[in-house]
Image (cartoon, rainbow, N blue to C red):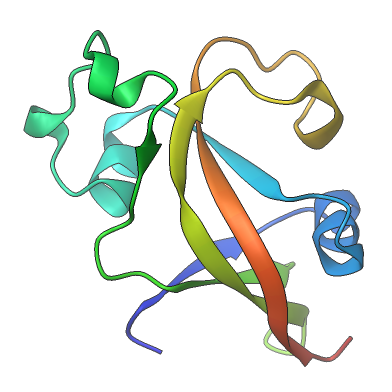
Length: 116
């Protein structure tokens, strides 16, 4: 799917998304993720009220394909992508020690499973 972002994740987070327990996936606010999720690093201003706690719609992306590992036969799930927020991470849904504002990818329903 051309409107899909592909993200490898650890088994713990994969299983939580698959079960429906985890409804957000977090990524650091770095130039790489700004380009992938927002589009243009130069348009991103972390001090802007627009980006702090406000809902941002991803540009043309409708789904996220989470892959548990890198092998071609790894487990995969295709999940609806509802949008994007910038906020502090939920400690139950991110690695220990994660601090500050992050991109929170708001997840919808699992629409497809492969090798699960």
